[in-house]
Amino acid sequence: MVEKLTVDTPVGTVLWDNTREHDKYAYNGEGWSVTIAIDPGDEAEQFKTKLLDFQYNTLGPDVEIPHPLLKERDGQLQIKAKTRFPVGIFDSDGEPVEIEGIKGLKARIKIVVQPYDAPFGKGLSAYLQGVQLESSPGDVEPQGSSKVSFGKLKPATQKSLAENEAPF
Image (tube, rainbow, N blue to C red; front, side):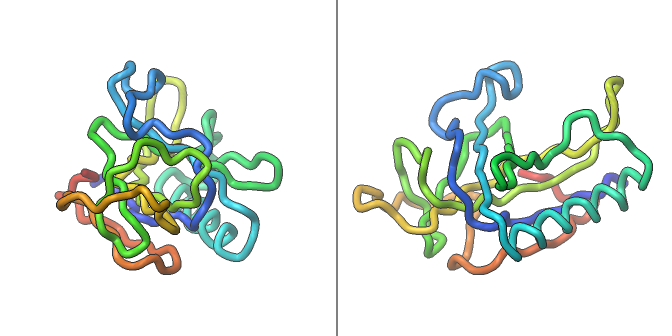
């Protein structure tokens, strides 16, 4: 059984936005991705602890990770999540919206974290489920429904998926 962790990141700033154009580095140019930077604080530390605990519990205490999921740069935590499927973007009330670009906006991402064991080493992958904007810019219009939904913006949450649940 492959253990998975579904978690909402704390709110951060979107550094790289490949939600409307394919990311040339994700899935041979056929995927989408988002990278966010999370400011230091209690929520960032709790998020980091959740991921490190999950890593320890799924991969073991003595595993060297060649490509860590979390990177620390300029005092912020950075995390990149990717997917093979189009990305849903939601406003602060959890309603789907259509928007051209989100780079520089405050947002959180819903991810499924899953361990991998590859020839180059072990590690964790973050699969992007959706993006929730902290506040919606004035030109954002609500758009129908989507398969991933957020509730109202609230502190980050965590849950483990059952073996038969897919990350998407």
